[in-house]
Amino acid sequence: MTPALSLYQRIAAEMRRDITSGVIKPGDKLPTERQLVERFSVSRDTIRDATAMLINEGLVERVPGRTGGMVVRDRVVVTFHASWAESPGAPVSEADSWITEVRALGLTPTQDFSCRMVTLSSEMAHQLRLTEPGPAVLRRCVRYVNDRPSSIQDTYYPKWLTDLVPDLLSPEDIKIGTTRLLAERGIVQTGYLDTVRARMATPEEAGLLRLGAGTPVLVKTRVACTADRVVRLTVETMAGDGNAIEYEIGGVEPITGAR
Image 1: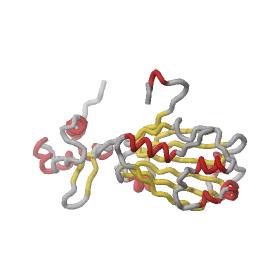
Image 2: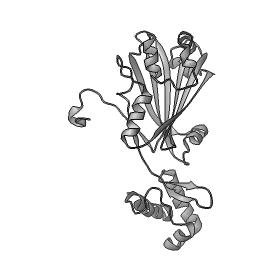
Image 3: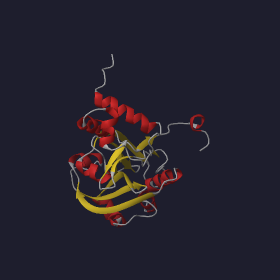
Image 4: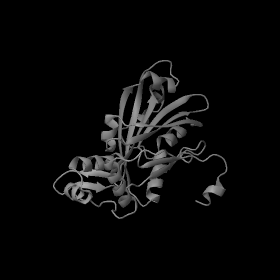
């Protein structure tokens, strides 16, 4: 038996229907707290519980300032086709693939890059098949869709590799992509092991991605190797309410048709 909804849950459900049906559109403000109190004949605390539920679901966000309020979010979901990017033998950067995906939706992609030396954790060293934790270069890319943070991509390159290819130390975006750069230097990545999981965001992730309370993240971990050695670890942390990952296995033309 489905448990009965509490009063604030029923109010949240009604407002959710208004949002998902388009009665209240992305960018529109919700009625004020006073208006909602009068509409539903309930206390302010009940309304606050209902709107907090919508915030946690990522449907609305609180915009500060005198002209702010509770605003309906534009819930655009970007699908990353993980099988397309960095195909062995024909390296295409994940950045190129992601930018193409976002632009195909009629949206504007932007990225911020940074680069710094870090010490690997024991778990990261194990994933990179190193005998012990040590230094690595962390290349971070924070991705935005229409100026809203969408994902954080952290890629770790072990020191032995950056000694061979010091270009990886550049704090700027590598235009051809690091996968193609390494291939040109004779380090061709031939295989990838991906792991995808969902979890709650850390405080740092919530801040960088501007996530509302209760919004989970989708984390894709990719370990990449050449024919005989592991060369990088990429951890991509995505806002759970704005991203999807799709893989193609085998011949899928009857499913996808002509793209």
